[in-house]
Length: 189
Image (cartoon, rainbow, N blue to C red; front, side, top):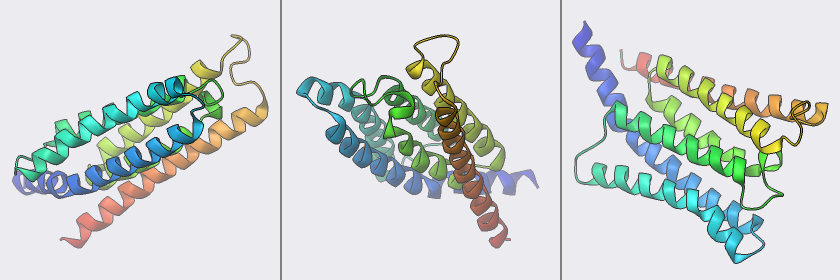
């Protein structure tokens, strides 16, 4: 019984790479648009585009491998998704300018396609851990980027409410993607 499950997991990753690749291209496009709107100088533009270029490099590698019939395995897909989250988290922390850091950064929306694509493709146990880790990374990024004093890192209760709401949305996206994965897996049986 183990062989069919391993085969199904490999097929999920193989066919799901298209979803992950296109989700990453949407992140690249949205990130580019957000950086261009937020940057007020050419140095801010160059500084803000560095993580977006990193996402493009990762996606070119994975997309190219798929096109030459050398698709990635689960480990590489997971690693590339972790790199995506780290790059997005870096943008949330440093932002293209000082006005767009931490909770003031609108770049948190870039987590959404990464979370949904990973949850569509990977098994529930991987998706749950990935979703929770992504939410934790965002919370840490907001605390690090928004802290002027050690006593009140989030500022007001409104800031805490915004942070909790955003994390709940992230968890919901990961949960819905995992549910969709489960439904599709059951349809095949």
